[in-house]
Length: 113
Image (cartoon, rainbow, N blue to C red):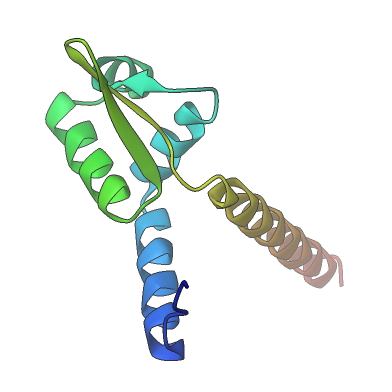
């Protein structure tokens, strides 16, 4: 039987995910992994950043359960561990764009008066 975390623990887990998703490099890594599993080298090349930087972010994402890793021969492949993360990002991006459009329209209206 699976136990359900107490409400405070659930809030802490959600807060950890949002902390992880609050970094642009981590979001770019997740976006790149959306198309399938990748090695650190492939992620480094795609993001045009350093290997230590990518490894640091992958470690955090792995510890948070957002990515999985599996060894195959001499390589470690990273993939999405929680596909729901894309829905969260989609909702956040859509809401942010809607709010930005609203502020822009308000600004234009104020200037035309």
